[in-house]
Image (cartoon, rainbow, N blue to C red; front, side, top):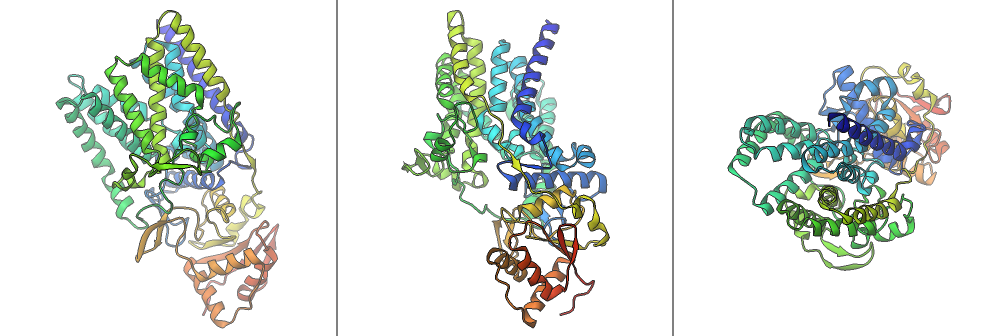
Length: 565
């Protein structure tokens, strides 16, 4: 029996690992030289991997950094710092680079999540090894999780969640209050440093299932109190720092239901699958590939309904199914839509967008919890079916899954990082805490190249601005924003880069630019080779800093140690 279990484990884990590699193979071809569909978030997570390396190897603060948005810095607890992954991966980042770490995080995240659900299902939920394998496959590789691997690998890294679920279940057993409560608290802490949003979705799911099943006992409550005390003690300061520390913000800089689930997206095939269609996917969803949270395909939708019917006598399965339905409806946001442009009317649970804490959740992601519940129900149904029905069930599963086989994430060549940064030439130009002003300035979309350069340079130097979440204009306005307050020089460089028109700077304008450079503690300004209207930017900066030094394919403007007014 033990040998059979070992062989089943090996087969399941190998299949998950191969599928994860297949999906990520485009990025593995050249981790530092390829861009995913979502290069902004890819660059951000490369920076987070670099930060984890700096924490472990250079003793920097895990919760805050001034390497981005210098000199003000960034509250990393208020961003997705993934310390639960970046710290263990720090040696990989140190020796192989942040790009390899991000590719590894996405690959291990997909395979590890499926493997963790396989463990829970095969050991504690179902007797059918095939059912456990299928449940793990869906819970780890469902289209919503593969879509998030496009640049948000933290949402594809749910490998701690099955162990949280199992410890919650075990709290109902006699004598498990302290042991499972402490372990649950520690698991909550780990998950909080991987993805707080998935942790919240899991808590909502378990609460709904417990209430619907009337399974909340005194023993369970006692264990949860122990877990809460352990997690609260360990997370008290990080959470305080997140919500009240420097760089904290309030709300998100976009509508929560911007990528809300549409009815048409549920039975649609994933766009990057055998039967998928990019045109159909664009018509039914909000437009972001990363936020394609459903796309279950018609076959799986049918098999989920079959599973619910087969499990109708199980109180736990009924509670899980209803909880999944509630979460799916929450993912619709405030308006019920058939497609991206076809609106039906108000959504039943749209009011949840205004509930504190829930008002920080992107609504489409509630469907990720429903997706996981569907995987558990499919495994349980496979375990329940008997006789001839077993062959019919597995034929249905095969017909449902084969058209959804993923083609792998689409990648494209990323701009080459200039030798000035790759070879470390920049080290001879800046000293101490001096920053490097990269032009175009690092930012979302327009400045993604600069953010990527800083990340692939292991955040070896501070950079002004960047792509992150922070307050719009502190302390006057702490509303969440993708960018720090606009400065004169930022606007000037942006306009010249967009229009190529170079204004003649008078004394007041030159003083404003110098003041911004002083604020940034700039050592040099580097104009990148692919900067739009590069020569115009060179002429603009010449008016303030003089003639640049061509170093390879970049223009380097030295900033005097003291820039007078």
